[in-house]
Length: 242
Ligand SMILES: Nc1ncnc2c1ncn2[C@@H]1O[C@H](COP(=O)(O)OP(=O)(O)OP(=O)(O)O)[C@@H](O)[C@H]1O
Ligand SMILES: [Mg+2]
Image (tube, rainbow, N blue to C red; front, side, top):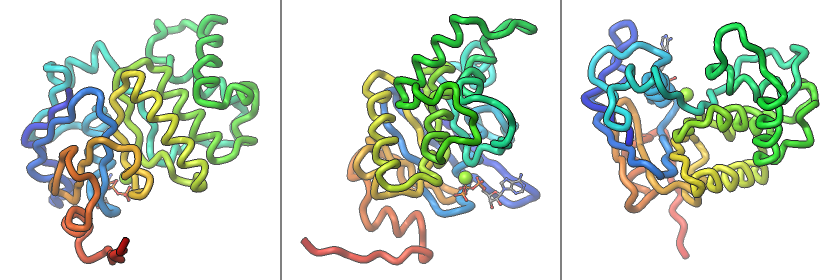
């Protein structure tokens, strides 16, 4: 379980996150939703230890985050990977990076690592593309490469920041179906997403964030009130009658 306790975060005197108290149980398929600038990526970066905590704490499996991170890692698919896709690397090279943290310093990947990487790529539906240059992959294929890299870290937690960006609707559905499979196989998934339609089908735990938490529960997932509270006046809801 992941617990955020009394988390506050400021950048240049501007409060980005305030009074975050949140418990994410193991085994859920959780979504973090909220408008642009709501602090979603910041919350994730704090969880991953990519930015320094200011106030409050994060406890993972009962262990303070810093200590937990010394022995464990998260599977992570970042928002907009800033990687030059003209760089001469194959899809397999990118996936192998997921294991880099487990290699002793100076050691290189061996055949066993490569076999494992290709196995995970097959699980993610891009096994055929293992030897392809990353510049030749479609947006959806590249997201699956990044997912395979995150899976290969072998963490029980899979954290994704807008994984659907740049993928068409059928692609998003098949990507979320794949995530659901990993969730059913035991991984706890926490994904930031703007695709409320898809989330309403796949997620079991909803975290609504706009600087503060507006709800975090697994009851009625996405309804008009929740959306209005989280997104404020920036969203226009069209009520549909059945
Ligand atoms: N390094 C930084 N320097 C200055 N401001 C920052 C920095 N990182 C984030 N912010 C600000 O913090 C706020 C929250 O940013 P964050 O990236 O967490 O939002 P988000 O909810 O992920 O938004 P989006 O949906 O657009 O990805 C924004 O107002 C952003 O401008
Ligand atoms: Mg973001």
